[in-house]
Length: 584
Ligand SMILES: Nc1nc2c(ncn2[C@@H]2O[C@H](COP(=O)(O)OP(=O)(O)OP(=O)(O)O)[C@@H](O)[C@H]2O)c(=O)[nH]1
Ligand SMILES: [Mg+2]
Image 1 (cartoon, rainbow, N blue to C red):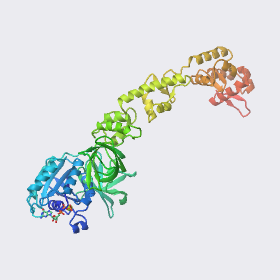
Image 2: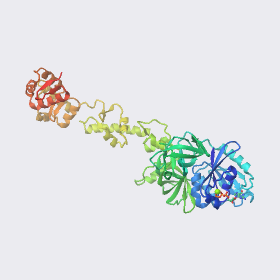
Image 3: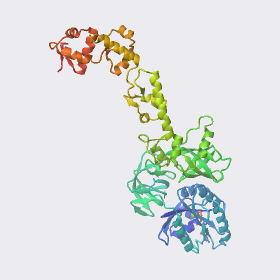
Image 4: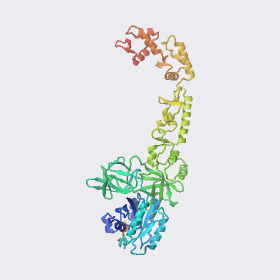
C-alpha cells in the first residue's frame, strides 16, 4: 500500500477525483455533502492496474480548514496536488504547496482537474513551475475531468509509476502513529486511525500514548476496511484499543513503541526555506497530526528555540512547520536539531548555543551528541532518535571518550589531594568523588577507578594506602615495644597522648588492624584477644571477673570491656551469676 494526500485550493475537484478513482466517498460528514465542501479529512482507497493499493487522505481546500489539511498531510510522504484548469493557481494552492515544501515532502504528482471546462495548459504550466521550486521538484502532470472521466486511465498509470518511485518504508523502525481520528465502535470501544509511516503494529502490542503515563494495548487492527493481525508502514490503519476511554485520545496524539520516544516541550530547530527575519513570537507548530502553540526564541540566523505548549514525541531530524494562524501564512518549515537542549540561563548562552546549532543538520550524530552531552544514558539517545553504536562505559551510560579520559585524570588528582589533606582516612568516599566530579551516578565513579587505585568499603584509595602514615606507625611500634611483656596492660589515656595517638590516629590504626580498640581510650595490640582466651582457658571454669583480671595481670578498666568483647565474639559466655566460661 502507499498513501497519498491530496492538496489544493477549495473546489478544485480533489474529492471528486478521489471519488472517481476509488468509487468511495471521501466526504464522510452529511454537512460536507450538503455544502459540497470538504471540512475534515477523508479516507478512500483503490487498487491500481499494477496491483498496488493506493490510499488517499483527502484534505479540505478551504482556507478555514488548513489546520485539518496539515493534520492529514503531516504524516504522509507523498502528495497529489490538484489544480482546476478553469481557475488556475489560487491562494490555497500556494499555501498547501508551501506546507508540503516546509514538511519536506519529496514525492508529488499534479492533476489538473476540470479539464472539460477550460484548456488545462496554462494551469499546468503555472503549477509545474511553482512545484518545481519546492522540495517536490519536477512532477508528472495529468489533465483530468472528474465529471467525464477523461484522463482517469492516464492518472491511474501515473499513480502506478509514482508508487514505484517511492522509497521502501522502514518496517523495523519504531512506531509513531499520529492519530487523525478517534471514535467509538459499539461493543469494541475506542478506535483511532492514522497513517502509519514506518514500523509494524500487531494485535496484542503494548504502546505508549504521548502525553499519558498509562500504556495501551492493541485489541484489534483494521486496514483498508479489513481486520488484520498486523499492519506495517506505510499504510492507513485503524487501531482498536483495549480499555481506553475515547476522550483520552484524539487528533494530535500519538501511539508509540514503548521506550523509543522522548517527549519534549523544548526543541532547537533550523528554519528551512526562506525564514522571515521577523518571525512572530508565537506561532503554531504542526508536526504529524498535531498542532501546538509555540513561543519562538531566535538563536542564530536560521535557528530558533521553540517552547511548546504541550510536550510532543519528537526526534532529531523531524520535519515540521510553523504557521501563523492569524495571517493564514506558513511561516516556514523546521527541522528538529535537538529535542533536549540545554537551558540558556547564563549570559552569552544563547549566542554560544547558536554557534553549536550552526553545525547541526538534523541527522542523528552519536559522536556529536556525546561531545556535547559528555555523559548520557543510551536509552536517552535512543529516545531522541540517535542510534547507539558504541558500548557503554558502565551500565547504560555512554561517555564522550575525551571527556571520560579527563574525568579519569581528575579522579586520580582528587584522590591524591584527598589523601594529602586527610592522611588518616582510608581513601576518598565514592560519594564525595561523585559530587566533586559532578557525576550523575556513583557507578560512574567506580567505573573511572583504575589501578593502582581501587574501591574498598565505599572509598577510593591506592591499593596499599591503608598502610599507616609514618608517625602513627612509629607510635604503634612503641606501644608494641612497651607492652609486649604485659599485653593486657593497656596504655593509659595520657600515655597515648604522649605517643601522639589521638582519637583520629587511633581510628586509623584500628582500621589498619594495628591496634584493637576496647573503648575510646582503651587499646590493646591486636593479638591480645587470642592470648586472653588462652590464659582464661587455663583457669578453673567458670571464673569470675576478678579471677580473670588477676590471671591477665590487668585492671578492671581493661578486663571489663575485654570480657564483653570476648562474649560478643562468642569466645566466652556469661552465666546468670556473672561468672564466665570459655566456650570451646
Ligand atoms: N465540470 C467539472 N466539475 C468538476 C470537476 N471536478 C470537480 N468538479 C465540481 O467542482 C466542485 C467542487 O468539487 P470538489 O471535488 O468538492 O472539490 P474539492 O477540491 O474537494 O473542494 P474542497 O474539498 O472543499 O476543497 C463540485 O461541484 C464538483 O462537481 C471536473 O473535473 N469537471
Ligand atoms: Mg473536497
